[in-house]
Amino acid sequence: MKKRVNFVIKPHLILFIVYMLISGILMVFSTGEFVIDFKKIGFSIVSGVQTYTRKATNFFTNTFTAVKNLSTLQKEYDILIEKLADYENLQRTNAEIRKENMRLKTQLDFVETINRVNIPAQIVARDANNLYSAITIDKGVRHGIRKDMPVIAFQGGNIGLVGKIIEVGQTTSMIIPIYDFQFNVSTRVQKTRELGLSAGSGVLNMGMIMSYVRKISVKDIQYGDLIVTSGENGNYDREIPVGTVSSINVNDYSTTIDLEITPVIDFNKLENVVVISKEVKEGT
Image 1: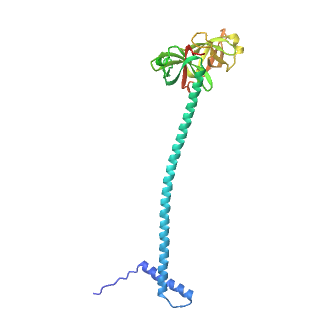
Image 2 (image 1 turned 90 degrees about the horizontal axis):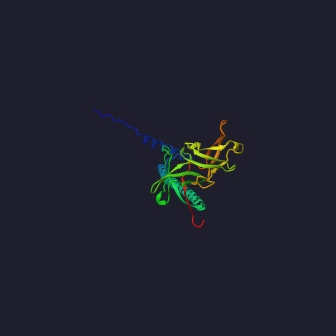
Image 3 (image 1 turned 90 degrees about the vertical axis):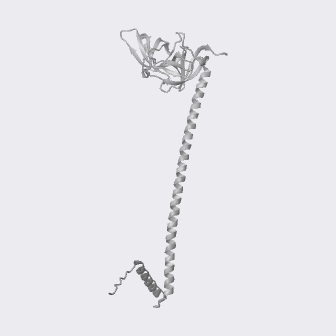
């Protein structure tokens, strides 16, 4: 029985033959001769293969290099972004430190202008649910603070009454703020010199109410007039700013009027206070 032979034509062989034929034809047209020089054809084929191989190699090499360079650039970019973020954080930190130093310097300059012995302090806690809406500071008996000492502050270029000391510990003290309903102080309208008694409204945003102001003075009092301490109760110096008139309430059946007062000090932003002693500084 005869074996059956199967011929398999491989594609790359066909391409090789076609390439040789095309190369021969091109050489015929370029030289004008019909003689096929297989040596030249072979050289042309090898040269063509080498050329395309070199181009392909260069393409892949350049692509790999570009990808590698891109990866390196990405890493360098990420590093620069991190350094930039660190620099921005450092700038913000430096700006905050400068701002804090300026604020403390302002407080120090203010303290030096007070002719009474005083103790600068920082607020460390607040308790709005406390009976006195208490404010706790970081100074106590060890620092010379005593009960009933008045507390003031310097804020935004303004001096204002904060309250008074009601409890004293070794290293901390508690302040009752002027807006607390149990706080009261003798006050005057600075411009008209009308006398009254200012008491806390019990609500931070409402401030204080100045009562017992003579009704006859209503025509002379205006919104925005400054209310100051009268100094008549012996615990507070005269002319300490308390707040400004925000409303005038007139009762037809009373001989007095009530003035609503907005505190000079913004208690929501208050951080530092100064506790004032009755003792006068030496040399003043």
